[in-house]
Length: 145
Image 1 (cartoon, rainbow, N blue to C red):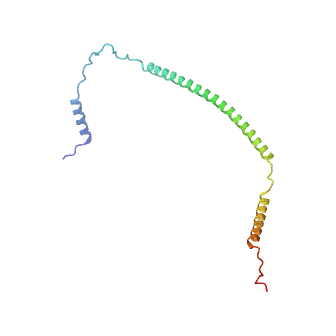
Image 2 (image 1 turned 90 degrees about the vertical axis):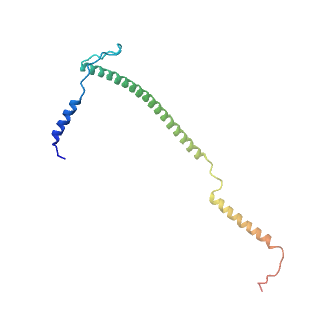
Image 3 (image 1 turned 45 degrees about the horizontal axis):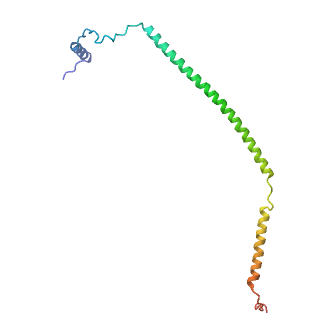
C-alpha cells in the first residue's frame, strides 16, 4: 500500500466531513407560549447579579458563624467556671484527707511487736505440747549409765 502524507490525508477527511454535514434547520416557533426565551443580558449585569447573590449567601454564613462563636464563648465561660469550682472542691477534699490521716490513731502494736508475740506463742505452745505428750512415767534413762 502506498504511503500518503498525513496533512493530505487530514485535508481529505475534513472535506469529506464537511460534505456530509447537515445544513442547519431554520428555528421553529416555540411549542408552548408560556416558555419564553431568556432575554439576552449584558454579561456584566449577569455577573453583577451572581456576585450580589454570593455576597448575600456569604453574609448569611458569616452571621451564622458569628452566632456559633458567641455560643461557644458562653460555653467556654461556663466550662471555665466549672473548672474553677472543681479545682476548689479538689483542694478541699485533699485538705480533708490530710486531716483524716493526721487524726488517725497509731496502732497499739507495731508489726514487729506482733511477730515477736506470735513467735513467743509458738514457743510456749510447743513447750506445753512436749510436756503433755511425754507422759507421767518415770523410767530410768538407759542412755545414762
